[in-house]
Every structure is written in C-alpha cells, then in structure tokens.
Length: 392
Ligand SMILES: [Zn+2]
Image 1: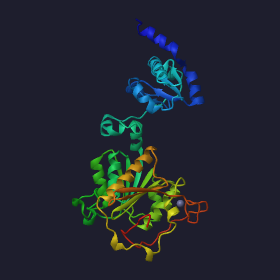
Image 2: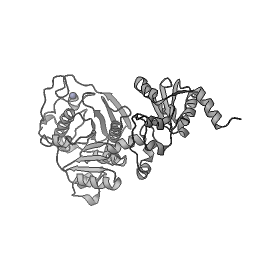
Image 3: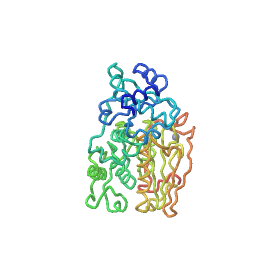
Image 4: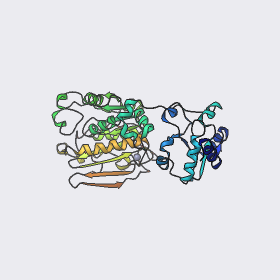
C-alpha cells in the first residue's frame, strides 16, 4: 500500500508539468483554458489573469461545462502544484488531450513576479440575495458582479417600464435610469405595477424609484423627470448606458431614441403593445437593423392610428416588459442569442409566439452606408398614448 508521497510521485510521473516561465509562454502561444483548482478563499486573494475557478472538489462535475472542448490545452494550477497534479491526472482520465499542471503553483508564479489579478467578490449578503443567479454557470459570481456594474436606461415608467424595471432591479442591475415626465393616474394602475394607489398624482419616475429602492437597495436609481427631446437626448444618453429599454408610447420619442442610440452606439430593447398583441426586438447599432431600417419615416398624421383606440389587456405589458428585461440581462451579461434582427410577437388571445426576421437596410437614413439624417428631428406628436406597433 502506498502512502501520499508515493502516490503524488507516481501521479507526477504520469502527467505533464511546466514551470511558471514555460506556463507563461504557453499562455501566450496557445491561450489555454487556465483552471484554478484551489479553494474559494485562496482564489479571492489573487489568481492568474484569465483563469477560471473550479475548486478541486467540484472538478469532475464542473470541468465539462467550463471547458467543453477536450482538445483544448488546459493549464491547471493550485497553490504549490500538488492538488493540480492530481487534478491533471483526473482530466487525463476524463479524456482531455493536453493537460499541464503548473509546478510550484501560484506561489511560485507570484514569486517570479508574474502578473496576477485580485478578483472582486460578492459579500455574504449579496451572495445570498443573488444565490439563484450564482447557481447558473452562465451568470455565476462574475456575471452577478457584471450586472451590479451595469447601467440600464428605461424610457418610460409605464406599462412596459414597470415589469422591466422591477425585474432588472431584482436581478441586481446596479444603476437604472428612468426617463418619465408623467404623473401616476388611476388609469395606469390596471397594468403599471411599479406604482400604487397611494402614489396617485406622484411623478412616475419618483414612484418607480421608491418601489425599486424598497425592492433592492443595491440599485441606484437615477431619475429624469423630463420627456426625451432633441435638446436633452445627448445629455441623458451621454451619461453612459449599456442598454436602453424602450417603453415609449409615442412616435416622436421612438424616432428620437432610435437616432440617438445609433449615434451613441447603445443597444435598444424595443417593446410595444396593443390590446392582446405585443412584440419585442433588439436594435443593436450597426449589427442589426435599427427602427428606421424598418420604418424610415413616421406615418403622416392622417395615417396615424386614432388616439382613442389604445386599449390593452393589463397583463400584456407584463409579458412583453419581462421579455425586454430578459433581453437586457442577456446583453448586459454577454450571453445567449439576443433578439437582434428578430421580431418576437406574442398574441395573448391565441396564446402564441411568432418570430419574424428583420433585415438591416443598407439605405437606412440613419445607420445605412450614406446616412441622410445626421441631426435630431423633433416630430410633431400626433397621437399621445396611441398605437405604436412596429408592424402597423
Ligand atoms: Zn437603420
């Protein structure tokens, strides 16, 4: 029967080891997957740049989702090179083709003056609050930290802005901007769930801020009690946003926001609702179509839908606004397939989702090859609160 030392020696004779100088060359030449197999507290004190953390105890269960390509070179390290030697043996057995262990480990790497990073980490309270995100590999602690650093601007704290802002706040998006110059009235409460009866008459932006802050104190809410105009759009967008959620209810704002977002290169998660039908898409500047690729100009006033007809099933903005929040989180995290160039339509009466593809127009007056619109246009508002369906 062999003891630990014999076993370690035997394992080391069966795996490939590199010293820190060779490891550094390997990182530059082959960009291997760098896997840190130490415990959390060790990882938090510093790690190799670009490394992922898979503690030795979770290695077998997590490595295939972390490094799915078994032909990719994997550089494993721990503190001194022993745990990573056993880990390398395990990966060999799991079929990884090029596995190397860093001899001397992180201690030797640091002693040689090679670069390292000290990770940001979530404190205990945040770890608990966002635990259901931390359990998803696509989000995890890194993703949650990213969300907490994210800045999302919501145009409108109405039907779509209500669920979108609530879910984004609950998810821990660190900064939410809310643009709305309106006040809460009784007809809003049938669907605008960020407000309440006791807030009747209050500013919608302020009311949303109070609800959001009560929900999640990690979120900073920046209130803009104004209507988006050519005068203020550069100032508001200039504050730097990762994603904009469009919950606007009128054409002038839609066009203004489109042009500004293309010029500021900020993706817009668009949503619109009418009676039982809603739709959403993502306008990502220069990667997919913009609103003007689809509708170069607003319809003439005589063609505009009647102002009186704008009814909506109360829950419909809940569905579409939640989809907008979902798209926003994907964009902020850089995961999944955002609805770029795809319009997702929901029919509540039929209970169906339909998707159509949208194409970028090379002759688009704003994002096309030879743009003809290069300055903001304030369109006359011909219908307040009316139908602003993309497909209409
Ligand atoms: Zn365009």
